[in-house]
Image (cartoon, rainbow, N blue to C red; front, side):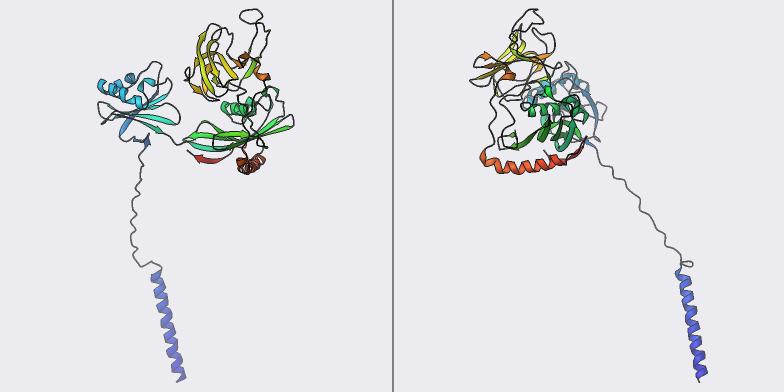
Length: 427
């Protein structure tokens, strides 16, 4: 009986082993027809390309720069724009940007239809880096002003003087505008002509960019300048009336007048009652300060005031005179051309009123800057000028908080061109 049971058990085990083997042989897929996998085709999605908000799929494009004496009619005539439409655009554009005010060397773009007539649909004019004007020439005639998004990027820099402030900042990748901003900021704390080799500075400032391209310098946020082992600190703070700069005690860094009315330049001749005149070849008082600069360098109003004279004389050439208050008046001589401000208009400190030239009795390109105190011409560089108002008491706590933050950033700046930058804001 036991032997029979053993034999039956053996047969059961043997049968089970064969079943498992057969199952495994089929599971490996050798005897099973594989299901065909159909791959879905990859569809490439091509995003339409736009420029100035207009689809390039719909129009052909012609780009260029305005040439001297070139008019709006000259530019659009080859694209089948009627004289009536040109006249209408000329009239309605005055409320936005007149087509009569196209400036040479500025960019323009014409969008025209892809038909055989090549009819212009839009004319785009770019008066500056941050805005563009759309002249709509198809359907309803219209003119629009559009602004590009401006990105403000905070940057940090450290430099050492080996030759000049200009050389040190440019060596670190800074622009001439940044040189000028630094000269204005510290101009009354130190004479930029007396900088020594080994003097150094740290700087936190803003760059303005459009579509990743640099378009200009924004505000200086904070700076430290070490001159002859003396440290000068500057902190930006807006008390609600605009950005101003203060030292660590809350005293204003600025005087009522700019030290350099010409973008960073050198003083080529000082106030001298007995100077030998280079043109007239005789001794004649020089009652101004000469700032040598290249032709076309912007000239800035030294302080807030009203233009009381704007014109030409044989000696002064193109000149402007600004009355600031009952005490001070300034003059700007030998300009190559004037800025946009007219006689009788109010200007603010730093507004561009003209450009360096050598008109009148002048041998080289420079600005002769005149300074009157109570009607008498005086030596601008020797005058004890009034400072801007110190920080008001109600702003001291907020200013000190900002000063601590700026000090931390300044202490983190390392030598060389740190290229430490990050996006501060977008406007």
